[in-house]
Image 1 (tube, helix red, strand yellow):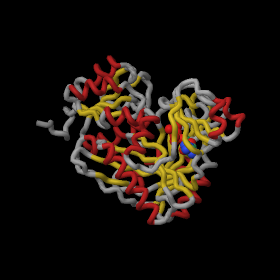
Image 2 (cartoon, protein in one colour):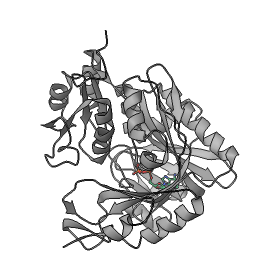
Image 3 (cartoon, protein in one colour):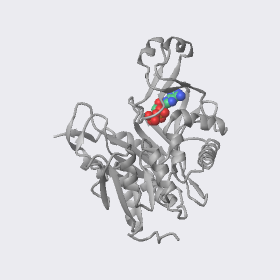
Image 4 (spheres, protein in one colour):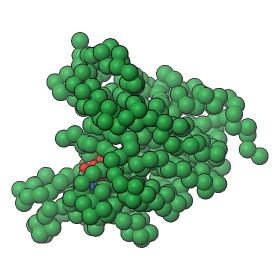
Length: 381
Ligand code: ADP
């Protein structure tokens, strides 16, 4: 029989100690659930708020098994982990959500794309490339996008090849090539599924990325037609059902000029494009993740306010003890919510926190987001 979930004796673990785990713990506290964290960095953002913190390497088989074997449920906040260890734990009765089978597909962009094609999920055409690819035969494919099969994140591991001269920038590791999609917007849909197969989908959001591929602005809801909204939601539900995944899934989409929607990639966990749900939706993505992996009823996803989110990134030229210039000016504005991630040291483009703007009108929200961007900087003393 399952243990009573609502009780501190329930053992829930997370592999990875970053800000996603930290915000997840804030929600788990409301359910009396103790969260145990493993990360190699003792100063990781969620270390101080975890019930227990274990120092260990999430890519090391023995470390993951030792951490997971006494847990009731194990989840992740990053895909780049030791999957073999997760299979072992699953076989030995630990609930591992998302399932290792799903993580194995998502961790490898080649397997991910093959999964979409096999399951009739719309995505751009692609090819698998071996390591040390023959660049001369790739010239005829220009323009295209090259992506590392594993290990990439936040645009690291993505190379856009538009000119013959760009071929020299190509990765040598195993990769995929994708056709360059001339999208008009980048959309994201968060969807959750529990063990009963119940699903819940959030309103679609749109993201603007900066020149190093980090989310610069997120707006909720996306400014799209209801037809596109319905199509995006249907695709997200289709993906999570076809994966038969338990947990929270962020589905990143490209909207094309003709209204077509293509899946770019998915992330099987709370995601940067869902941070606004803390203030702007009935149930936050973190609470929804908790509900989905513990097979609770899923929460309502409706918007309660219009939202914008901007990441607080370390400013260029600053490396050291972080200070948040302009913080007081920004939090004195109605509807502005601050989330700092507990990282002591700033460096250029490091995600140090985020700000959510929650207001009653979309126009107001957009204007405020653009203004606030210039009011706050992460720098050093
Ligand atoms: P990561 O996993 O590192 O976030 P993504 O696959 O999301 O990498 O790619 C990062 C960004 O590169 C996307 O947000 C998008 O702007 C651009 N991009 C990725 N794939 C394509 C593509 N096939 N065509 C055009 N732009 C792309």
